[in-house]
Structure formats: C-alpha cells, structure tokens
Amino acid sequence: MRTITLGGQTLKTNDAGLVSLTDLYQAAQAAGWTDGKRDPRRWKLQDGAQFIAFVAENLNVPLRDIYKATKGKGGGSFAHWQIALAYAKYLSPELHMQVNEVYARFKAGDVRLAAEIADKAKPADAEWLARRVQGTVARNQLTSTLAAHGVVAKGFADCTNAIYRHVLGGKKSEVCAARGLRKSTNLRNIMTTEQLTVTAMSELVARKNIERLNARGNQSCTDHCDTASWRVMRLLEGGAA
Image (cartoon, rainbow, N blue to C red; front, side, top):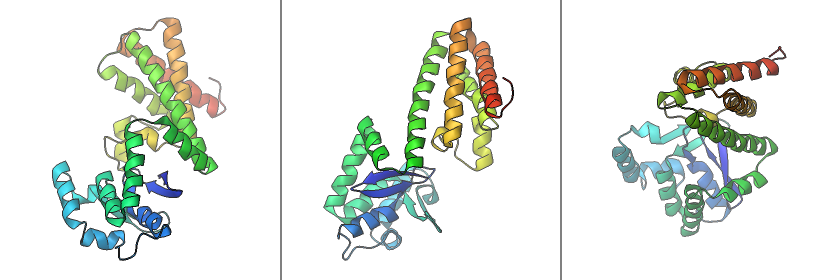
C-alpha cells in the first residue's frame, strides 16, 4: 500500500494502483465540501454507477478490476484513476481541481512531486521512496549497459529474472502467479525497502562486471546478473561471496 498527499490529506493506492475514494471523501469532508454528497459506497450505486460501468466497458475489464471495497485497517473503496477523478468532481470543484493538478504533475514526470510526498511521508515511507528512486537509477544504468553489450529482445527480461530469482525467489511470472498478481504488475512497486536495496546493489555489481569483463550477448550478461544477485544475497545472509 502506497500513499500520495493531496491538500495535506493522505490518499492511499493499493497494489493494483487503484486510488482510495474513501480518502478522497475524507479529504473533502475535512474541507467542509461533503454536505449533501454521498460517500463512495452510495455514490457507486447511484451517481457513479453509469460512469463506472462505462469505464469497465471501454477498458474491457471486469468491474472488480477497477473498483474494489476492502475491510479492516487501511480498507475502504478503491477505484481506477478515471473513477477517482469523476468522484472528486462530484464532491467539489475545489477537490476536482486539486486532484487534476496532482495527476497532471504525475503524468508530466514532475520529480518535485515525489520530493513533496517524501517531505510529508512517514520515515519508513520516505525511506522506501528513496530506495525506489535509487533503484530506478540503477536499473536504467544496467539497461543502458546491457544494450551496449549486445543484449536484445528477451535478453533484458532474462537479466531481470536472473536477479529476481535470488531476491524474490523466482522470475517475475512465477512471483506474480504465487502472489495472485497481474502479469503487468511492476514488482518493484511492492518490494520491501530491503528488497529494493538488494536489487539495486545486484544491478550495480552486474553492470560493473559486464563492463569490466566486456561480456557480450544475452546469455553472458544474464549469467553475470545471476552471479551478481547471488553474491549480494550471500553477503546479506552473512555468507562468503
């Protein structure tokens, strides 16, 4: 579960990237914008029903994939970002504008948005974000090196899976199947801080070795990624690398 901040209020997103309508409602409630407005459960059944069905039809997905209700701590109503924008518009023009601005900055890749989130996040969440950003840099550097050393097509996925095999216990498809995740899930978005750190370190070691030894081609580079990840995990576990 990850969060973003809107007008000082925390909005959760679940592992599938769905936005918490419950948090949107609470943000509007705190600002005094909910008089006469329905909470997400009632809105879904009345004002929002037609639009939610329209989104599901146009995306060609079951309703359950774009709207989920969960119970317990951290639960509530979660929906596709298109539905979240529609709900924000329903609640108030002010909230609608705030949501649009945040989403526009996100789509534009405004890195300052991440910094603002980190400033307001809990220490553990800020640390996760820092590791995630560092991991993106390490991944991009490795990808550039792989391309320069003759890796093509499926070779990039093979190199990634060689690292995941030691960090996560299997290649991406196996991890997704075991956890009931979509094949399109970005596993790095659900990794722990430790897993992100190990993955980034493995990619750094693999990149350095590939460059130093001038490894070429899919198989050779995949082998270096596998070895690098194994050695980093061994160090973490207190064994000799």
